[in-house]
Amino acid sequence: MRTLVVEDEVRLARHVSRALTNAGHETAVVHDGEAALADAKKNPYELIILDVMLPGIDGFEVLRRLRKAHVDSRVLILTARGELNDRVNGLAMGADDYLAKPFAMQELVARVAALGRRYAEKAPIKLQVADLTLDLTNNEVFRGDRRIEVSVRELTLLRVLMREPGRVFSRTELCEKVWEREHEYDMKLVEVFISRLRRKIDVPPLIHTVRHLGYTIRETAP
Image 1 (cartoon, rainbow, N blue to C red):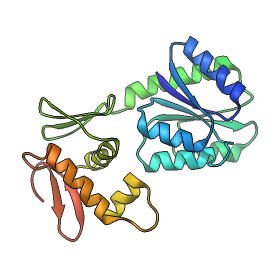
Image 2 (cartoon, helix red, strand yellow; image 1 turned 30 degrees about the vertical axis):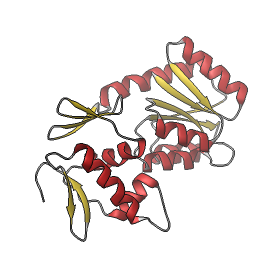
Image 3 (cartoon, rainbow, N blue to C red; image 1 turned 90 degrees about the vertical axis):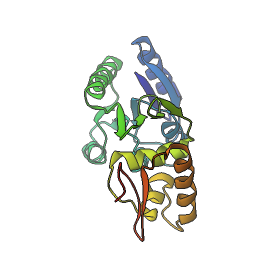
């Protein structure tokens, strides 16, 4: 299972990575929240092991931003022993499990294995609208049998639309979900990327403009 370890204690991160690698997992390690956000949005990790106490952006904020960006990786948060509020808050924000520090490495590996089984059972593999398919495992887009090259940002925008086909997304909402902008929304940016996607995938058209409201993806025009 592809796993990202987010832990600022370098020695502990190294031990966790080694234990998971020995258990057959593919691991990557980062040591702060900014790096975790950038890596997790770019790469399709199946699991993120996320320490709550990180320099700069803490683990809770990392988790909030990942869920807001529709990153669906399972998340195992690492909390201080006895911090009940941390565990409750983490689960409420979208974490899938928690483990209190200090922990036995065998228990961590067992928790990861359990989350891997749950991921395999529940995680969607593909999104589909008409003959347009988005493979979430490999981040690949197909229109029929034709593979379509898209950028990371185009892929994120398409994923947001395809998760809820038929729903109309305003330009502001798309800015929030794709660019995570909380101020000074750039509506032109949305229009530019919608136009790029249309040029690549829209024959016959699937992405529709709903006047005065925004955009939707569906097989027939609204």
